Amino acid sequence: MSVEIIPCSETMAAEVRGVDLAQPIDTATAQTLLDAWHEFVLLLFRNQEMDNQQLKSSAAWIGETSQIAMPVDRRGDDDVEIQKVSNILDEAGKPIGALGDGEMWFHHDNSFTPAPDKATWLYAVELPSSGGNTMFGNCYEAYEALPADLKQEVEGRRVLQVYDFTVREKPARDELDNIPHCWQPAVVQHPVTGRKALYLDRLMTAAIDGCDKSESDDLLAQLFPYIERVDYEHEWQLGDYVIWDNRCSVHARRNFPADERRLLKRGKVEGDRLLAAKAAAG
Ligand SMILES: [Fe+2]
Figure (cartoon, rainbow, N blue to C red):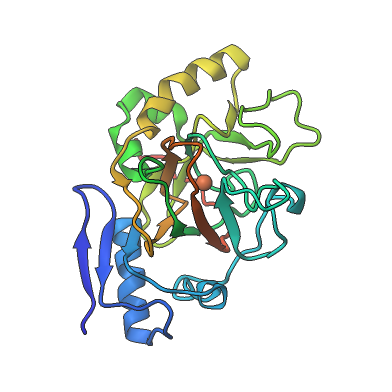
């Protein structure tokens, strides 16, 4: 069967048909997938059946599997490549996974590390009867939508990305001693497509450099709405495998009934240091 790539929305995401990720992927198919992934930012593969071993090589057409950043004591098991995103409790009442319930604000995965993961995948194993959709925003579009004065204001700046695994809120910029954090370009240049993408988000961006706290807060408050766009909303079905580019997209989760079980498996592809976008000429 030949590979079909079917766009899911005007601005982002495509469904791939005719590929079984559990099987080895030939070079030509790998290139087709990679080109489509760079073009559409997110690819969806439905009806996939994969055990953990197969999942671990499911994104080999993008790169090397990355190790999970979340501390072992916060994520239910000690697999270093596959994380369970789940609200399910084991017989002792202990969570089998992490980030189990509730909604999550838009964010870029691992932006608080020096070389954030290039890709993240999620694979649906158990789903509630409703809710829990994952929303995705295209950050190329977010950058392009900025008015000229904001574009000029943000280009060439850096943002402080922080994430405290123990809380859902963002820590203050002066309380960072024991919390993972990293300065990143506010606008990144994608190393393959060359396109510019806005790289900040309400969950993890605590400050923007070159201004005092109130200026920084004001500027970020103006910028956040541009990143919080729903270019594609994924309604999960069992066997769905979704893989997205963290350099040029954000994602967020809608709430779902807390008394229903949800289990997704999650893995990542290693990334490099982000490139700052070159300032626009003139
Ligand atoms: Fe995430």
